[in-house]
Length: 294
Length: 165
Ligand SMILES: Cc1cc2nc3c(=O)[nH]c(=O)nc-3n(C[C@H](O)[C@H](O)[C@H](O)COP(=O)(O)OP(=O)(O)OC[C@H]3O[C@@H](n4cnc5c(N)ncnc54)[C@H](O)[C@@H]3O)c2cc1C
Ligand code: FES
Ligand code: FES
View (cartoon, each protein chain N blue to C red):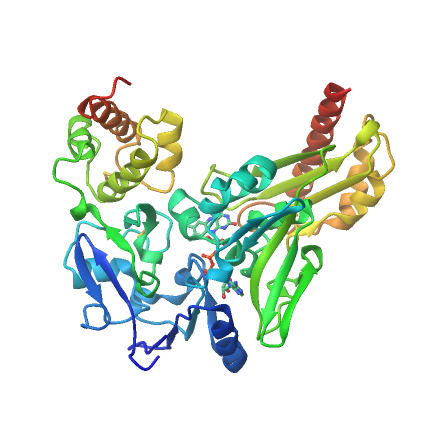
């Protein structure tokens, strides 16, 4: 189905992914993929009757599925934050994703905002990307040339630049279930709960069986041009006993990993200090959890 | 593709469709369709950017800010705005009793957000009420009376329904 809009661009609302990919392949950047429209409508000034040619993804069954297997959950790009947070497998096994989905604006926003839109909008302040980085998610992108799966950690290149090609759509996000020995932590520091864009958000997956760090993934929002996975920090902590990690070590590693800026919401120095504090608090939590387990 | 646009939904029980011209454009904001085309002006425009909730309505029972919803996405949906609530909805009386409306701009959106909550959770805690209404801004009341009104309506609904809550 394709609809001619009276005031500006056309409105395409295909009912299958194959049809959507055809339109995308023909028009490339001349069509704007639209999911929940919570980011797009703000920019369009649709109230004044202006909008581009739109490829509406809201009727694609392939993008509206949630599939669960032993290894993890595959979430369609057009699944809303509300549906995501209420899904039993997500609620039961991926608590950080529940927390971030419930932080993605107010209830009215969460009901429309999609996981795929949150990723593709590519804001460094977005709430779900750090959680996906900490869990080690993979993305599936598709075009008429075929589909491919990439590690989400490789996806964001620079401010609002990603590895997605102009003829591609994001189809789904696969989030592996963490190991039973891993503990997870999610913290968002903002001005007002539930509505505020984060000043700093951190999600952490720490696997420290027998008290020694096997895997440590710390991912941040609002600490650079893209959602960031702190690679130097992971390397610095791996193999160390969880108890007695020196804050100076964390500060040094984060100095390489993060590149916060001053902006209207906060200063770079404040953000760096908050980042170190959040990491130390997560380590202390994980340490306490580990002690309880033994 | 040959038969042209397939786009049809109901707003407060009335059918709107592209085929008969009652939906002029798929990119139109649901807010404009409600106010300008359906002539139902209970739904308000505060910010036009999703921040204030004055334009909140229910789409298939879920709260949505109508300033951010293009009508092209509504095929097959049921939309309820403030005019679509039953006249005797306990929330309306509870808002009046509690003095929860001053200028009234936020009130329709508040009531819709509260309705979405009570449909899901008939006996919410104060914390749940706060969370559910966090996207609805009020510049007049300071929120206390609004939250009290929602709790009051919930208590009333419990007894009216005969439940021994
Ligand atoms: C009032 C308000 C509060 C908000 N609060 C928060 C918040 O607290 N935290 C937060 O993270 N975000 C917040 N947002 C931003 C927004 O709601 C989220 O980024 C949301 O997840 C975007 O999803 P969407 O489906 O609405 O995206 P859309 O607006 O439909 O699209 C966003 C971008 O992604 C592209 N896109 C969407 N889907 C695909 C796909 N499958 N393939 C390729 N490209 C695609 C679009 O072309 C567009 O560039 C807020 C927005 C508003 C209006
Ligand atoms: S007018 Fe729609 S949220 Fe403010
Ligand atoms: S009563 Fe005036 S904004 Fe709420």
